[in-house]
Length: 113
Length: 114
Image 1 (spheres, one colour):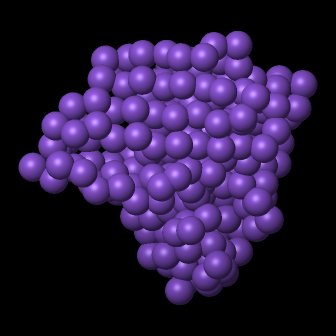
Image 2 (cartoon, rainbow over the protein chains, first blue to last red; image 1 turned 30 degrees about the vertical axis):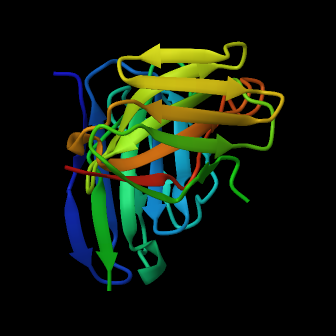
Image 3 (cartoon, each protein chain N blue to C red; image 1 turned 45 degrees about the horizontal axis):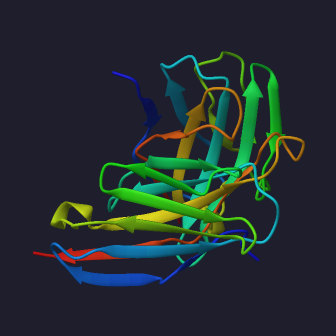
């Protein structure tokens, strides 16, 4: 089954404790991206990657890191999480670039205390 | 401010009625996409309309695009309780602009009552 898998689905942690949210897709997609969804602000792009070893900042990259060492994986790293990063996070992927239909994971709800 | 803005923010209708949601945007686009999000789940792609298209259909969905007014509408006909969800438009900037960046609006929350 074609899918985008995020882990964990839920996480409660404390300020400053490094964490990684994994994202994996099995559709051989070139384009992958991370979004955060906050009430009243909609979905905002954090980082995107057009292919292996190619990543770029989205609209709200501060406090986040990503890497794209393999085509299928695009982990989101919070080196020193803070409470303002409490949010619902989505990974998405597509063929080609952002102008193609995006396939979304089921989301990761992060709470930073 | 957001590239795509949906209207209304919330819509409540009875089963069998039609639901219309609107999206306005500010700059040139490559295409416009509509997505659905069920509560607590990821977004699901519904339909994509290119900048040179005016109307597109998919099952009970009808999307229109008016590039002169920079607006799009999503019509769901004969709505069902299962259509209850949030609906988002996403405008895609031209390819020369950040590889076709996708920008989401804040969504319309649709409630279909049985």
